[in-house]
Amino acid sequence: MSVSTLSRPAQTSIAAGYAGAVVTVLIWAIWVLATRHIASTSLTAIDAGLIRYGVPMLVLAPVCWRTGLLPKGVPLRLIIVMVAGAGALFFQLTAFALHSTPAAAGGILLGGSMPLATALIGVVLFGERPDRMRIVGLVAIVAGLAILLGKALVSGGMTPAGFLMLPLGGLLWAGYTHAYRRSGLTPLQGAAVITGWSTVIHLVLAAIFGTSLAAAPLPELAIQITSQGVLSGLVATFAYGTAIRALGGTQAAAFTAITPVLVTLGGGLLLGEPLGLTELFAAVVTGTGVALSTGILSKRA
Image (cartoon, rainbow, N blue to C red):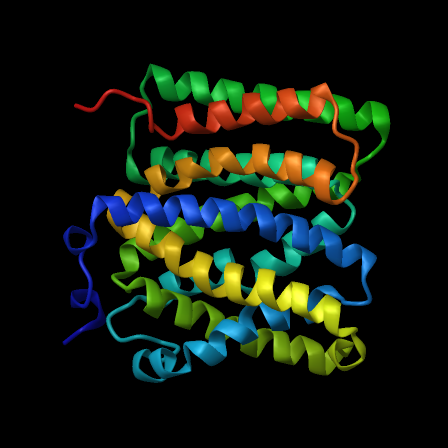
């Protein structure tokens, strides 16, 4: 039996898809905060990447063994896009950007660009035609990001790297969303392939640049193992795959509208970052725009 026949969208309930999307967004908010927290610890982005993909790879080793790193029936280009979009390249790019970006701003830029890029790819590559509600949503996202840009320019709280790399990370994730939906892989198989390749890549990076995992305090390791490895690497990857299979890539991505609001609140309450009306307003505008642009409130034909 080929991989593409192991799971079909009709076999995954809509309720499970919505549950997977909600779980994913909640964990993403934790992931942004935990990745931002790395800047204040002795851990490096390579250390975090080893945890992020190594922990779920150990759990999913039996699945990876059966599926293989190059599953039969899945085009190589889809595997490359999946691994780049949700694996090592995405992680290192966004971790570097979040290192110098306040959590609230990072959540808005990343959480806003993910579904925006997903919708745009659908229009450009797959012929989706946005209705009026989606167009309003796109305008709202641009407005929210413009508010954030203006605030950052005035306060000086963000580097150009954040504005450039986080939207690029969102584009990579959008590519993964569309590629995974067309791969025919189950959520567990997709997670196994991504974590398998990404662990190999991070082991190579650790061999070249070194790692400080052995010297890291246990409390720091515990936080990152829980947030990066267990929640983000294992639970969220499976949950998002379930959401894509049940709801489709565009509607699954719509749920990231919640992320900017959660991260903005978390950055202020947990990391002690400035939390003003401007940040809250930008989060609400961007989140509303994301929901509208991805069609979650659009009329169905």
